[in-house]
Image (cartoon, rainbow, N blue to C red):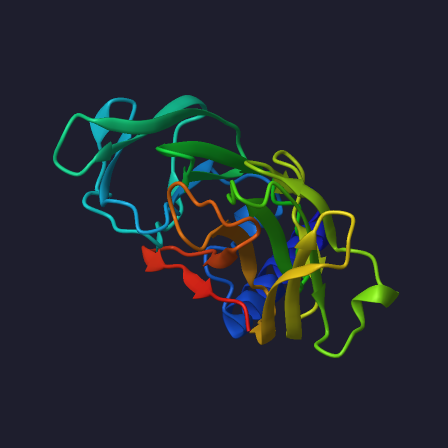
Length: 259
């Protein structure tokens, strides 16, 4: 490699570091953006009003113990290949669900405990993270954990937009599925003021309206719909939303209720 090319690459890396530092990039590092980061996993407890849980990895207890509803762990590195994650009721060997993550270099994974009809379920999302070096856009994805709203359309627009004039940003999001789908990169939006509205799929029947909300540059949002009433939710389309943001340490998801 010539000295000129080395200087160009170094300059781009320094510029990217400055951009990420200025915009609060969280775990959004250069290694993530060029696809050489170690595979990493975060865990979300999205079981509405559910019990506290312990998280196990490959049968061993992790530092994620006695975590309550709305906990979003920071991303942590894992080995490539299969990693088994399980949720146990705190302090017991009673497992409420598990999933195996087939981890690959440059990918981030989210493991979610979510409410079912009578018990918890577990799902995962594979995020290949394809963001450009100098891109300051926010990344967004929707995951439907609402057993009482099994197919939804998601609109993320400026607040005054008439839904009849636009198509959904993320359409036909099925129960226990994500859009963009697991294995695809997130969608990208500019930072600014938005309004999140959710309808039953294929209609303009709004079942959730966030009102105005702010999305920062370089934000990384996982928008998760959940039943407002938790286990055994029977009221169709009565939902709320958890927003999990990309973190390097444990945090609490932002809970949004319809305005």
